[in-house]
Each structure stands twice: as structure tokens, then as C-alpha cells.
Length: 391
Ligand SMILES: Cc1cc2nc3c(=O)[nH]c(=O)nc-3n(C[C@H](O)[C@H](O)[C@H](O)COP(=O)(O)OP(=O)(O)OC[C@H]3O[C@@H](n4cnc5c(N)ncnc54)[C@H](O)[C@@H]3O)c2cc1C
Image (cartoon, rainbow, N blue to C red):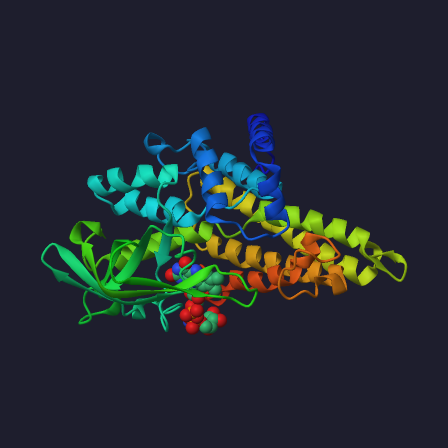
């Protein structure tokens, strides 16, 4: 196994680094590193910048705009973007709906939706979860009844991230309630401007508006928006979830936050000495740093397997668990390092100290979500137990 970058890979990293340096505005980078809320324009603006460069969808097939990078180059690109503080690319269109369309979509669906997703013309969201149907997703109840050339959809989705920005939603709906639960589920693409859709915000404990409830009240959806066959939506849903979990490790971002944490801990003092030199604090920080290094090596190990043509399996769950635990641990240490400066429960911009520390409490609260979304970490542990222990 070779975990070192080749000369070509190192040259590629330098190219990406140089391009990011030249194209990511200071304003956007500051917003990211100070944990400010990003607007729809911020998110789409960065998407379009990358699309213009041809780098917005590296893992798509080349004829649709993919870069043909190796898995290692893809990893380098993501890590550099995370490290420099580039805004996240919203995954719902690029990394969830698109792979599904490549695998299961008709030619007409591909032609209609993929170029718009690539360019950032449409903003997508994910309509899987419902009240009472999160981990137990197959129990979902939102109904779609076929009437001639369309379906009539009735029901409710919840925790729908960024639905308030969305033009389209991909939904799991129940088209048959008679047999095995999984067999009665279908996958529909729904225009968010359709009459009968209501989006209601859910404000989370950090005061931010990321998630929503989405209500469907006799919404008419053209039958041509059904992906794959009716009743085969569960196959589509599972395929999509594998792609969703690939993107949750966020190693580059954690590396940047670790560096920020060290800077903060060097500035703060305890008993007249930098906090960074405090034995107990240094011990906790070092443990997270070691975990992060171990995650990176593990990730590279999996990439080496992929390079050899072995598809990923339950490893994706391991990356999700460790990656999100590290993200949460970093926010805990930042709160500890900032001490009373992190007491503002909601971000306050005109306070006497810097914006970064003023947003830490909100950030800490917000990051509790990472062990819940994309399949909770308990569910990921179940997956690993089944795959490796045969339980
Ligand atoms: C910030 C945020 C954004 C989200 N965005 C979206 C989105 O855009 N679209 C979307 O469709 N969904 C979204 N979700 C929903 C997310 O997928 C669900 O919250 C998640 O799957 C858990 O489901 P639940 O909330 O119903 O909790 P439950 O399934 O009720 O789980 C409650 C607790 O029980 C545990 N548990 C449940 N079953 C088991 C089991 N079998 N073994 C062990 N432990 C178990 C869980 O781990 C959890 O701790 C989002 C959630 C959050 C927090």
C-alpha cells in the first residue's frame, strides 16, 4: 500500500491550491471561517464559479461535465477546498439527484435536469424524512396516487434542508400500501412551485434557518417525473444514501478548524500562560488531532482500495462516524478555548470581541446535527455490525 502522493498528484494539489487562492473571494472565505450564515447567492455563486472552471461535478461521467480525475485527485480537491474555507457545494442536486439520474433516469430526464444541475440553474432539496419516519424510512406515508398522466401527492416531509431556497425536491412517496413496505415506495421529482406545496421554517436551537417542514396538499406531479419504475423507489433511495454518506467526513474542513483552534488557544491565557500550554487542554486537543490524522490515513487506505478497483462498502459508515465525532469535538474545544467570549448564545455582530468567538456557541449547537443527519451514527454502527460481524 502506498499512502504518499505521487509527483503528479502533488502537482495537481498545487494547481488546485493556486486556483482557489485566485478565485475564492476574501469576503466569502471570511464568512466561512467566521461561521456566518451563507445566503442562497453565496452558495450558488460559488457553484457557478466552479462550474465555469469545469470543476463543479468531478465525479460525473466525462460527457456530462465530469473531470475524469482519479479518486485521489478528487480527494485532494475536496481537501483543498475544505482547508481554504470554500463554501460547501449543496449536494442535493450534484451528488444525490444526479447520480440517481445517471443510474436510473430516462434519456429525457437526463437531458432535462442534468445540465441545469451542473450550471446551478436549479436548487434541489431532499424529501425523504417524515414525522415518525427517519431511521425507519420505509414506514413513510406521503401518498402518491396515479390519475391518468399525473400523480396526486398528499402528505408531509420534515427536516428538509434548504427547502426554502429550492426549485425542485426529490421525494420518496408511497404508491402502494398493500404489500411489503419497501415495495410500495416510488421516487418522484417535484417542482417546488407546484400549487399545493407549503414550506414552513423550523428554527433550530442556534437560531438559524436551515431546515423546514414541507406539506403536500393534492399536488399534481406529471408521471414523466417518476424515476425508475413505480414501486422501485427503495432501490433508488438506497443507492442515493451511499452517495450522501461519502461526503460527510470533511477532513479538509476539520484540518482548518484544528489550525484555527490552535491559534485561538495560543491567544487565550490560563494562569498567565497560553492555554495551548495547559496540560489538560493540550491533552484533549492532541487526542482530536491524532483522531483526525487516523481518519485521514483511513480515508487514504480506502482510496487506495478504490484505486485498485474495489468498491466502498461499510467503510463509508466508518468515515461518517469518525468524521462527525471529530467535527463535534472541535466545536467543544473551541467553546472551551474561548471561555466567556463564547457565551453569546446567538451570534452578535457588534460585540467587543471578534466575530469568530461570538459565533462559537451557535456553531457548537448547530454541529450536534452531524451525528443525526445522513443516517444517525447509531444506524451507521448497525450497518458496520451487520457488514463486518454478520449480526
Ligand atoms: C440538520 C438536519 C438536516 C436534515 N436534512 C434532511 C433533509 O434534507 N432531507 C431529509 O429527508 N431528511 C433530513 N434530515 C433528517 C434525518 O435524516 C433524520 O433526522 C435521521 O435519519 C434520524 O431520524 P429521526 O429524526 O426520525 O430520528 P429517529 O429515527 O426517531 O431516531 C431517534 C434516535 O433513536 C436512534 N435509533 C433509531 N433507530 C435505531 C436503531 N434501529 N438502532 C439504534 N438506534 C436507533 C437514532 O440514532 C436517534 O438517536 C435532517 C436532519 C437534521 C438533524
